[in-house]
Image 1 (cartoon, one colour):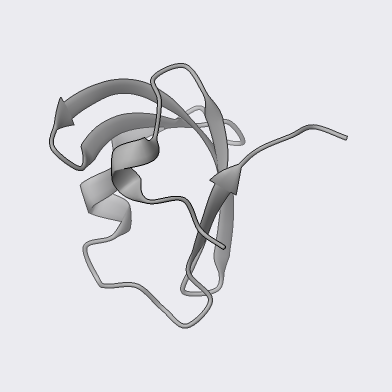
Image 2 (cartoon, helix red, strand yellow):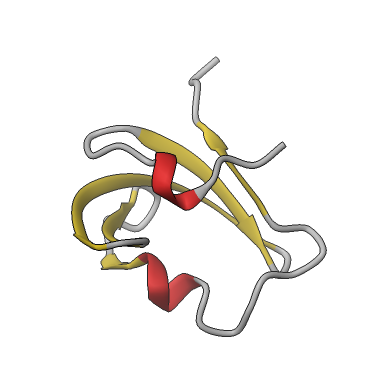
Length: 69
């Protein structure tokens, strides 16, 4: 079950899956209600969560806290 966007916390890491893409992101700062500045931990690129969801949520949409195993 996915975490709601308003439950995300700055400094925490999450696994984000949508439209066939999987990413591990870290929340850098809250910009507004449900928009956050995030850092992709694979590429170190920074972008907003709004950019990731711009094209909608796919059937595989999932957002969960990341736990390194």
